[in-house]
Image (cartoon, rainbow, N blue to C red; front, side, top):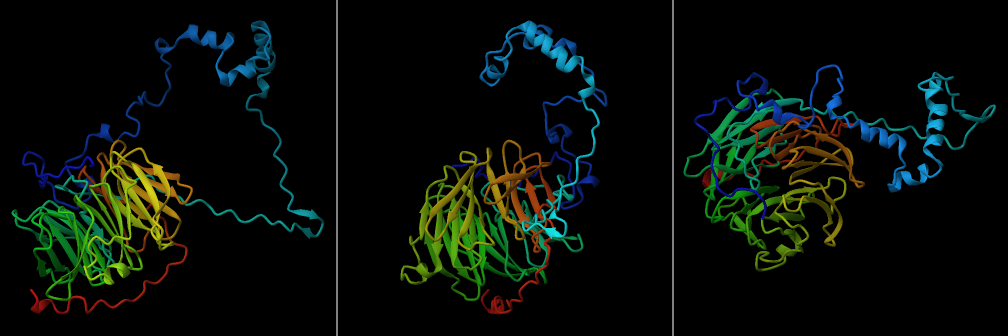
Length: 472
């Protein structure tokens, strides 16, 4: 179990200052307390001068440390060479106090490295050009207001589509933010009996949007015409917290523990059911090839489902997981398939686990596990470099960039004052949007610009929704 609330409320506070959503945070009257944004709350600021506080100094202790022999392991060997206190003082005066010219003294410029072995002979071991380290901005490029964002770890309330439009659910309302123009529009506000919105996912065409509701319904929208195309009912018995597309298949995960494949082109849309979780399914991700599905649940389980296994079973894939992985000790929500290795999956655990784990999904082997020290809310791979970005909850509420496979920290991005529940990546892979319980949406230029822009493959999705008019 993870420390996320199952109780649903839109988070509205009538006493709070009402402000328009997805507006620049700098233009709003509401601002979070400055003290909560400090990177070092214990640090004191004394202005531009350092004024020593002698009352906080222990002069006797300082004198003892300079004159007495210490017995700790690190310094015992070095101080053993000093026969007495008098010898130590004499050595100190001789080498340091009476020879101040050695401190920060200018010296001749070191000689240039020789690039040739002999005249006219170039070394056979040419030094490889060192790749310049990418500059990673430490602050958000843009911050927008996101009032009424539901603070629930198990939901998935933000997605960035291939047409460069970001969708985010704020309470009962779905908003669309066009990254190209910076404009915001309201797609729909669901009825109070059906809300709040609990999940959102763009179809591959970047035009159609799936919305999961607290009432268990799933809505399919055409965002180009702001038209509701279809409502899928009876798929789940309770709220739909996770969604994932695989071409024309919309996979839904519910609080009832069920995972259902829905073919949106046909009337009887529920074509496949996976049953392996005993609690809410809070993470769903299809692999890039569309052959494997990863699911994470509040039962601390991670399942890998294979299309070939499910399609060959007459029981519609029921209970036929490829791998059932029980290594996490908290809810598994954060899932990310590696873009440069098709069988590599990264997963993150909740507050009682705090680990990022890497899996070979062909064999089910855990390749590595890294304790991050805090709740892992979301994971994203860099599409251009071997890097992984994680977002976290208590206690730092930060985004951490890792170098893969060494898992050395490259950067820690701070600014959010509550747990960073959701992340989404721009279509070009460079910008990351993060939404947190502090009701702000921040954009980070964390992944840089690719050296060579690869043209997006042209894929036709026109046949996905062409039969909605007669199957409503």
